[in-house]
Every structure is written in structure tokens, then in C-alpha cells.
Image (cartoon, rainbow, N blue to C red):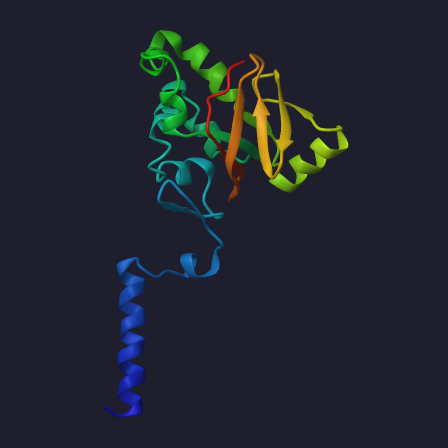
Amino acid sequence: MNTRSKIAVAGMMVLSFAFSGNLTAQTMKEKTVMVGGAAMYPSKNIIENAVNSKDHKTLVTAVKAAGLVETLQGKGPFTVLAPTDAAFAKLPKGTVENLVKAENKATLTKILTYHVLPGKFNAKEIWAAVKAGNGKSMMKTVEGEELTFWTKGKDLYVRDAKGNDAKVTIVDVNQSNGVIHVIDTVLMP
């Protein structure tokens, strides 16, 4: 095979990958973070990314039940503290099933909006706020109450109104309308 033929074959391979979805301009230029086995694209909004994470199925179901999909697809910016399915599994048996019932929509909305900060706060900014606050930083949620951020060693934590601590396990998952930080515990107002 001559050089011209090799170049043509290589070009066809690249095009076939691109058309098959395995290699796109988006995946080539965006810095993604893997969450729940899926790439999270900074050009997509919070909902467009969250639905692809296999670790956030319960959260997505809850957001739909609370009617918050449109809000979290909106302009924002938002900082979402996203509990994993394992975090929801720590709740007492039957809690999630009860919360997603139509009659509990107000309670579910209160809990979910307690996981959202108005504005975009990356981990570096939160760490700086904790340092400036002599070891803790209070931040007001969309729900209206505050969360307390603190650090231990190289780990970032958030404490809810009930005194429960959640460890931030993945930071700075950038979105077109904010940022997601993955947490290992559901926060309660």
C-alpha cells in the first residue's frame, strides 16, 4: 500500500469513528470528568449530564418527581451537591419511595434544593472560604438554610442542619450552567 492509500484509509477510519459516535469533536476538545461511568461534558447542563451517571439514578428520579428538571436545565449558575445512589441507600428503608410520592413533593423539593447553592463555586473557592473562615464556611442554599463546609486533611466535607457530614468524593464536575460536586451522604435541612 502506498503512502496516499495509507492516508486515505486512516482518514476513513477517523470519519467512521466520528460518525459512529466513538470520536466526536465534543469529546476531542472538552475536558470531561467521569462520574458513574459516564463522561460529564462542560458544554451540557446539569440534567443532560446527570441522566448519564449510573451512580445518580435515584437523584435523577427524585429531581423528576419534584418537578425540578426544568429549573436545573435553566441558565443558573448552580452548584449542586449530588448524592450518589449509595448515599440514598443509607437513608432508612422506604424513605426514598415515600419521598417521591406526589403528596410529598414539597418535602422532596425542600430536601433537593438544600443540595443546591445559587452560583458556581468550584472546590478551590470553597477551600479558600473554609480557610478564610478559620476552618469552616457557611453557605446559603437555594432552599434557604445554610450548609457548613469544612476540611480534614485533603478532604472536603459538608455538614447539614442536622449535624450529618457528607464527604465530597468528586469535585469540579463543570456544567454549562454550573458545577456538580459528588457527595456520599444525603443532606437534610
